[in-house]
Image 1: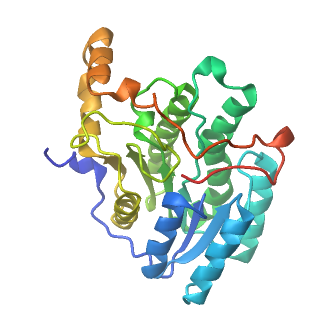
Image 2: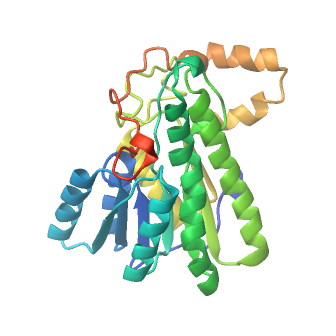
Length: 297
C-alpha cells in the first residue's frame, strides 16, 4: 500500500532528550511501553495512573535504572482530581509533551451497559482529554513549544457492535485532535499535535477479539505499536493509523451506507467483538470519586 499522504508528517524532528513527557495510564500496557522507550531516549518521565501499586513498582524500576521519573496517582473520571494533580505536577516541573493514553472499555451491547459504565467511558476516553490539555496547554502556549498526543483508536474512524460507547468516545477523541490542531495553527507555530488510531492491540484490554483477515487487519503487537507511536512523536507526525489498511475506511465512506456496512461485515469488523472477554470484571467508581479504577490501554 502506498505511504499515507505527506500531510501526516512534519519535516522538523523533535529530540526527546531532556524533555518532560507526561503519559496517562502509564502503569501498564502501551503507556508503560512508551515510557520505557522514551526513557531510553533521554526523556524525563511524568507518569499518571489510577493503579497506585503498579505505578509505584514501575517508578521504582525506572529509578533503579537511573531514569528521571515523577509519578502521580490520578483518577481520570474526576475532573477535580485531574486539576489538583495537574497543579501539583506543574509545581514540580514543566511538561513538554502530553500523551493522553489512558482508556477504558466495557465491551457490552448498548442496552446491557449501566449508566455508570457509559459515563466512565466518556470521562476517561474523552472528557479527560479536555481537562489535561486545558491544564498543560497554557504553559506550552506561553513558551510556544509543546506536543499534545491523543491516543485514539481505529474505533474512532469506524463503529462496530458492542462498542457503541467506546467508538463514540474515540470518534470524539479524533475530532478533539483535529479541531485542536486547527485551533493551534492560528495561535502557535511550534506546538505539535499527534493523533494515533490503532486497530486492536494485544495488551489484554481487548482480550478475545477476533480478526477475519489477520494479514490486512492484524491484532497488533504492543511493543511495535509503542515504538511507532514514539517515532511519530519524535518526527512530529500529525496522524498515525495502524495498520495502513485502516486508511481505506475514508474511501469506503463514499459508498452507500448499506454497501459500507456490508464491507465491514465482510472484513469481520462488525463481528470482531463477539468473543470479547477483556481483562475481566472492572469496578465502577463509587460516586465517581478518586481512588477507584481507570485503566491504561
